[in-house]
Image (tube, rainbow, N blue to C red; front, side, top):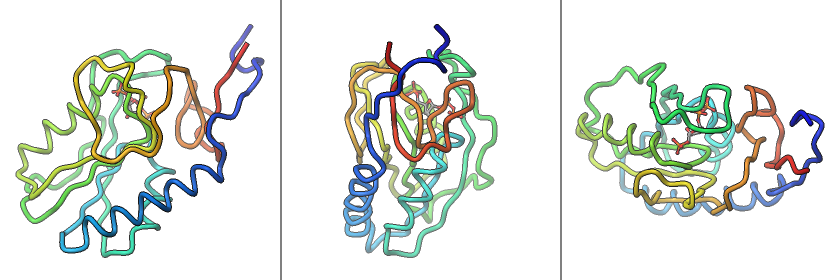
Length: 177
Ligand code: PRP
């Protein structure tokens, strides 16, 4: 059966996501209050999470976007991180950089991006992800801020895609048999 015809099971409702993002925003507002925050959002998956999160951070904040790609149109990571579009700055020494992504799975994307950005000398470099699937790691990595730890299931919505669709759904759901 094609995935589109499968039953949808809601994993995280819009209300649950909103509530968690509000709390993350409060924590980040406190942690970055004396810093010079630069959010770097990893497209495309994180565009919705980033938009919601930065509006809950009550501080001056700069936002840059970097487009990364590891999955293509399949459910499994290719294991090859591609920087489709980089940020323009090659010197980050003024900034406390917070990378924002929708999900960390194998962690190849996050560790790859961290390696690239750390060469640009940020004052500090941390990451905030909405979803974390620690059971899927190919490299050891723990994100600094996590919205929800989730089990190993294929999920879509709220920025996450299947075949580049479903990113606009306002909650996270799984296709089940
Ligand atoms: C997804 C997701 C993360 C990455 C996580 O992006 O948005 O950036 O995979 O997987 P990893 O921890 O195994 O590296 P993808 O490359 O599919 O592109 P997208 O953001 O355009 O959906």
